[in-house]
Figure 1: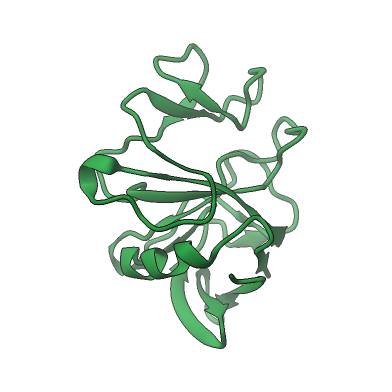
Figure 2: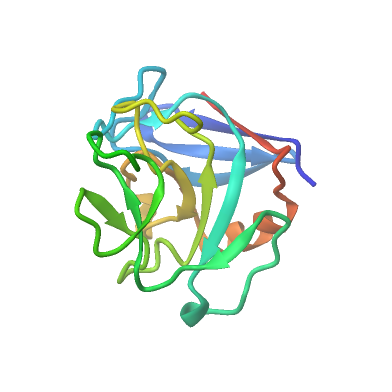
Length: 172
């Protein structure tokens, strides 16, 4: 089980970083807005601070169930995540179709084939402080995320079985 994972910005490109675990660097993509201590909804930035993994999701139709110590469930066709700051379910999982603004969890690309929810802005969710901060699969070339941390699928599959609710991602 991993206790601490450091996520550091790469010098020269604040949208790319290194996720360091057991002294081993893993390349990662960060938010298009870099890393910030003043996270706001829609800013595209990855929040700085210590975040814990809460639960994981996976696409059962895109591969076998990953090994995982976190609560894990398959992503269903009607799964969404509310990002509407005016909605009572802001920064929570919702069922689609949903009347407020939300993200579709069952994406047509592979970015959410495995997703780990990080505990950013939860219990209670402060409206406008940012939603849906995940560890997920990176785009080709580690193109920036909307605020999440993204790594290669192979690295995510190796990391996932070692994550628990006690693991801390320290993003700086």
